[in-house]
Amino acid sequence: MKILIIGGIAAGTKTAAKLKREDRSAEVTVLTKSKDISYAG
Image (tube, rainbow, N blue to C red):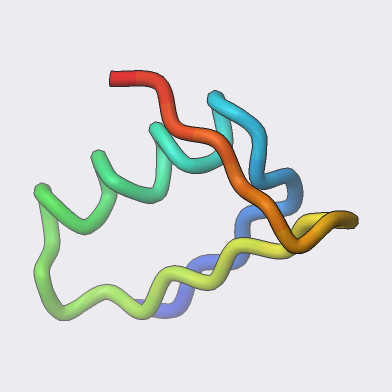
């Protein structure tokens, strides 16, 4: 499964991490404006 997440702030990276935990074979790509991303646990 290929998943595209737009927005690398807390909600986007949290969702990406959750998707990878649920399905290790998923290809998750996160697009963000800046080079820095944020993560909320």
